[in-house]
Length: 393
Image (cartoon, rainbow, N blue to C red; front, side):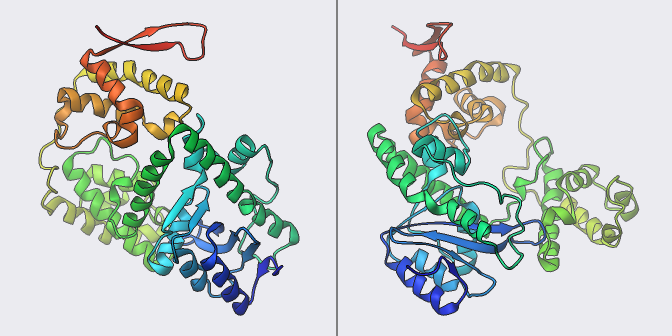
């Protein structure tokens, strides 16, 4: 069997050929994200039906590996693979043709999501992966035997998990649900590589349209500057400070620097650039859909949401599907607002809970409760799932 640690290019090329030919593979990565704009890839762990290996990106060009993962319609298994797919996209502009994320699969077979790799392995295989290297700096060399063995543990159980979870999903008729969910999730990762994803800034939920225009300009500046400096964007300018600048709506450098937290020397030197961002945001035409502030939702929206959110949780628990994967209290309120026209909701945008497998599992039932077609009652107050849903005659 080949050496489990790949440090020579010809060995990586040979491994890549075997990966490309395999009908199913699993892989994981170790990376460090604290100091660079993009996370720094430190290790790749891969498993096929015939072998396990660790690839050292510091000593080989890993492009052939990423090409091998993208080749053919093999099944590619991973756990919480957002970063893994992002590495692959940046390398070859492609993602696996047939993905299987065991974290999502476990969410369709249990009430826990997102579950750690160790938790998924323990629940569905009765095994306990090795621990002990969680805080390792994976950039340092040489790697110890303990580090290599720990890294291999992260892929050791991926293929058995695929077999077990696929069996359960087939029995419960949920394999299509998983495929649909992963297709949307994977597409969101592809889209995020190019999308100006400024709406993910934390703390912008209460900002008006003009504030948001300033946030957008500050975010674009932060992305460009952080990429140029090769540092994490939030290290350059934290989200809370970005939002505070947007709230003040001042394009005067001295007033911007008066905000607590902006006295760092590197930010003081950027005061004129920050002021220019604010100015562009204040002068920019508002995006379509932002020109009018949404109507304040009525108080009964929250009351109805408090009534239906436990119903969602109960339905999911009885079905053994993780409620946190299905939807949040916000999703429930959006369904209610859509049904009753509250809060200026777009009537042409179907809520998430009324789409696809979510509608099949919970959304249609919640909609029936809102429409009076079904009722909710307490069937057994001592049972862990005390709620029951009945047809209304």
